[in-house]
Image (cartoon, rainbow, N blue to C red; front, side, top):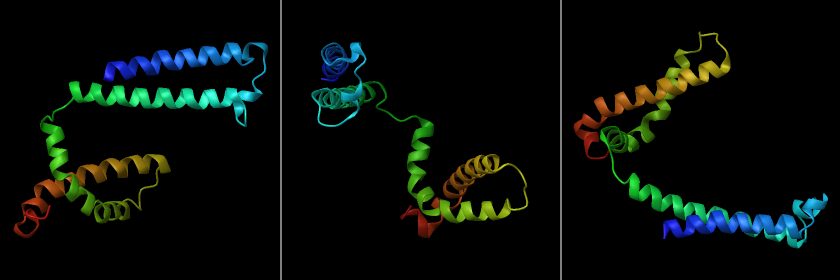
Length: 140
């Protein structure tokens, strides 16, 4: 099914695009009907986009299911701790950002450092401390 829809997306999309270019006047420089409005060329472009989008989505879903349908050590770790990280990342991020107030670096650099630190600290705190506490163990 995935291969079928992959072929439909590629070949069907390419066929509709070529037909639209040849029959719609694009080769003569008339591109206005392709830019929207009530034109058959615009309708053809919308249908082509949807055909390619849906076809490739089905193909990719099947392809990833067949080739990447398992969890390794790291994916399992992140998956097990995801809810705890979701619950506790905000206070950790706020604490870290308050600690970074004195650093005067470019804003983008501070954002990247804060993001990486928040991810690292949140997973360490959640996996190493919070998920081992008796009260939170069953919830998280």
